[in-house]
Each structure stands twice: as C-alpha cells, then as structure tokens.
Length: 432
Image (cartoon, rainbow, N blue to C red; front, side):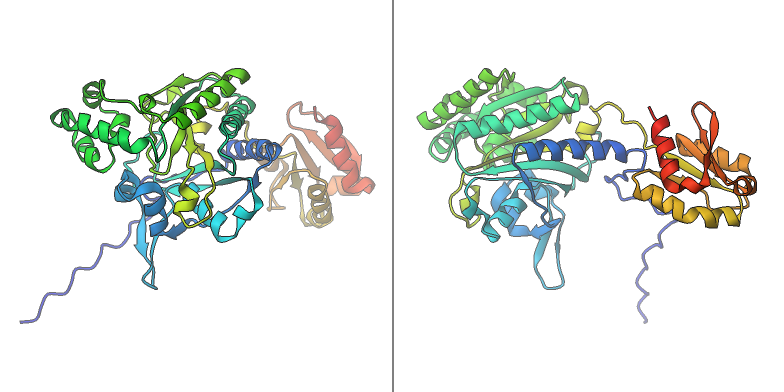
C-alpha cells in the first residue's frame, strides 16, 4: 500500500508581517534614534572612547564561557543555530562578550587602557512585553585597563552626564558590590545553606537557581520569594578587605561629584562575569522592565576568554527603553519642496536641485510634471517643507522662480540667473 504523501507546510499568508517580538523603526521615529546616537557619539568622544563594531553572531561557546552556561540567557534565551560547516553559532544576546573577543583577537590589550563603545541590535528569545523585545538595541561602553575605583567612578559619571545631556532626570542609580574570586565562594556557600532551608518557599525558578546560580535568587521579582529571602546573608556583609575598600572609594568618588545613588544589596546582575561594582539605572515610570542602563566590573573576563589578565568595567543601555523617556523629537522637515510645472521646468531645475542639496539643503519634490500647482502645493504642505519653490511656464518666460513661505504663505520672486546660490541664500535668510 502506498504511503500517504507528507503534508506540505501551509503557504504564507499575505501581506506578511514582522516576526513576533521585533519592531520596525519607521521614518517618523528615526529622528529620535539619530539624536540619541549623536548625543552618545559626541559625549563618548569627549571621554576618549573609540567605536568598535562586532558581528551580530559569534561562536556559541563564547557566550557560554563569558555569560555563564547556567544563566537564563544561555540556557533559555539565545538564538542558536548550526551553520553549513557544522559550527554552532548564536546571535549575540549582549555586547560585552563580542567586544572582549575582538579585544583579544586583534591585540588591543597591547595598548594599555582601552576605552571602547558600540551600538547595535541584540537578540534574546524572551516573552515579548512592554520594554522587552526579541530584537532590541543597546549602546554600550567598555573600559579595559586599571582596576582603580576611579575608573568605576568615571564610567558612572559618563552615564550621569549622558542622562543630563538627554534631559532625562527621573532616574535612580542603584549600586552594589558583589565580591571577587576570594570572597564570593564562601559567601555563595553561606547563601546556599540559607536557601536550602527555604526551598519549599521558593518559586520553581529559584529552586533551580538555588543549585545552578544561587546569587540570582536574590534578584527574583516574585513577591513570595522576596519575602522568603528577606533574612538570607547579603554579599556586602561578606566582602574581603580589598573589595570593601574598593567599594568605599567608589562611593566616596560619587559623593564627591554629587552623583546620588541608592545602595541595593540584592542587586547581583544576571551575567556570571561581573565582579565587585555592579549598578543599574532605573526609571520608576517604566513598570516591571524599569532598567534603562546597567553594568559593572568584570576583572577576570579577559583572562577567562584567553587574553592577558586585564581588569574591565562596562555598561549597556537599552535604546528602546531610553527613547520612551526622551522628549518627543520634532519630525524631519525638508527645507524646500520643488513644484515643477511642465517638462521644460523640470529639465531646467534638475541641476539646480542637485546644487541645492550639495549646499546642505534638504529638498523634496514631486515627479509628475503634469500635476497642477494646487496638487503640488498640497504635496508640499504634506511634506512639512518650510518653503516651496515654484517654476512653471510663466516663471520661465519671466526669468524668475517663486519662493513660497509655507508657514506665512508670503512669496517672492528670485532671478533665475542667480541659480542655486540665490535660492539657498533666500531660504537661509528667511529661516528663523
């Protein structure tokens, strides 16, 4: 008996839509993105940072080794695939690991103190919700070199200056010290013993974390878990002398600069590579996903990934979350809309429009020379252009072009012999 044919996948329905958990950034939104990126680039340059761009995917072991094989990110959230050569690759869930890989691979550790920043998309397979997408964007900073507390203070100062430059003031800096390879193991042992006694009161996630990553239990947002773990040991009470001294100097530096902060002894961050200073900037108006920027020290990460021992500290800020806190950016507005009536007018103005754009003006235009002046003025108004340049048979015969102010509706003639320069000068003179 012949076997039944295998069922074929259902053909896609059109129109297709974006995958779940990702978002298109439309032209009306991009001015705010460009402003944020421009402010960051300007400030980062003044702090001596250089831009680095790393691939969107990396060998999977890089993230398992750096972030931690038993973290939620690696266990549940990474987009991992096997390429045609049999290599396991993963879309980057965060930026630090790739930057450190590039730092080692290209010998940047030979340059001493290295200050780097990056911008780009990250990917995590999480349940989409407000403030959490499966493709999201981060802007991050990594400073590699001395482990002096002053470096921590400078990184936090940079973030404070960035938020000031953006006009974002209603943020809270939460600060903690999470120890080092000397003081953390005995603390983890004490914490695990305390959690063992509370196992029945913990959520399913925390019962698993109690074994795989006990520090993450402290960061659980489930109210019953937070209540049950109120009395467990805290890392700040178990710091070695070196870590305690480092943290005291960081706090003194922030106090001296007038940068306010709140001590949060339960702040541990979700990545295994953090040591000593850990921090988050949170915004109360964002709901459950209220972290705008976060980071900390990772003094052993470079060595663990095969490089020369080199302390580091960094942070990443969530672009989508931060944009919700920024004042609405005005829409992009052309300087000029060209209403060209007839083929002769179009032929005459093509080189002029090119010169106007070369002179720095943003010029929009229609492409139907048979459209009426009324129709073209309607399009000019819809474009948002401040001025409309009008050229038809009458203007050609008179040797002029008309410049119409779309806000005040006044218009005046400009001699065509003056070319693009005369038009550009008139636009700039009339622009407030």
